[in-house]
Amino acid sequence: MSCASEYAPQLRSRGYRITPQRMAILHVLRHSGEHLSPRDVYQKAKKDFPRLTEPTVYRTLEFLVRNGLARPAQAGNGRLRYQLATGDHHHIVCRGCGDEIEVEHSLLESLYRKMESTSGYKRIDSHVTFFGVCPECQQP
Amino acid sequence: MSCASEYAPQLRSRGYRITPQRMAILHVLRHSGEHLSPRDVYQKAKKDFPRLTEPTVYRTLEFLVRNGLARPAQAGNGRLRYQLATGDHHHIVCRGCGDEIEVEHSLLESLYRKMESTSGYKRIDSHVTFFGVCPECQQP
DNA sequence: AACGTTATTGTAAAAACTTGCAACAAGGAA
DNA sequence: TTCCTTGTTGCAAGTTTTTACAATAACGTT
Ligand SMILES: [Mn+2]
Ligand SMILES: [Mn+2]
Ligand SMILES: [Zn+2]
Ligand SMILES: [Zn+2]
Image 1 (cartoon, chains in turn green, purple, brown, blue):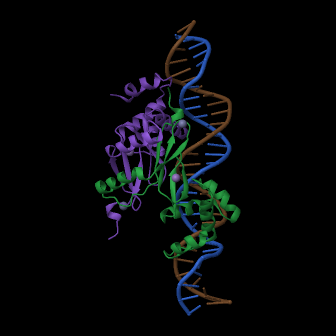
Image 2 (cartoon, protein in one colour):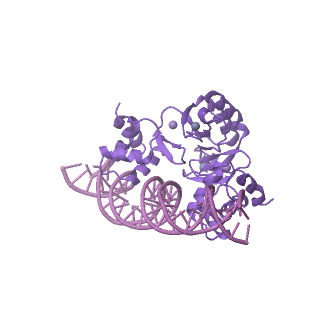
Image 3 (cartoon, chains in turn red, purple, green, orange):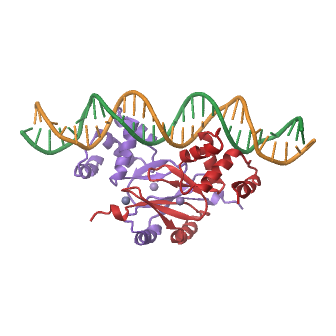
């Protein structure tokens, strides 16, 4: 299924417009692997749509996040990277070497429900980055 | 207890130097409330030590984090803010209005132990920001 | 197909953050 | 106190991210 046919209807039905910039960016997120920096997205999407500019990339990524199509993640250096919003999961980044692993969302499921009931906040669905020390960086 | 007498020995014993810049920044973190942006820290600490520069603030904040004296937190806008590393806790930020509440660390304690045993990573001690929708922003 | 509304984009400039490097100064040794 | 080593800083220039606003173009309507 193409990006356009999959994402266009849900955006249009909310009053948003389908632009080649948005389609190019969605296409990049869909066909590249994990977390991409805004700069990565810009450089890749520019190949499809050369007039694309960086402010549009930043705005579009935030737009996709607001609409549930993408998720931001904190990289080891504190900057944000983005990825399509499929399959809940989380990350642990090593404070020593920056190595990164995934954490199953099932491990956090009960925490989320507990936080929702104790805080009154709803729809907690973060894509969280934890920090720790990987096996290789642990001292003997 | 003053900032100097409390923090200086542990920094000096690791081979680091005590500078008026570092003391001014620690003093600001200690006597201001919650999360401060690098800019906030710069402006406040400058009053104590006018020759302070912004690169030094950024470098010092990261230095304090590396040495366990401060913690970074992701603000609602994706930027980092800093706070002294006392009392483990976490945050939930409202995606609607940006309102923010604290979460007791005890709610995450068992998750941390579970992540450490399943991943092999140790010393997971993040100061996490979750995102959700606060009671006021929930639609009827 | 032509029009009008208004969401979206590009441009230019600002603000936030990072980096390289020479000058400086903390603190141990003489 | 003076000297030396080297961790830290300021400076200047880069890179990344945000903002304001006028120009553009998506798309429903005629
Ligand atoms: Mn991820
Ligand atoms: Mn906090
Ligand atoms: Zn590691
Ligand atoms: Zn709210």
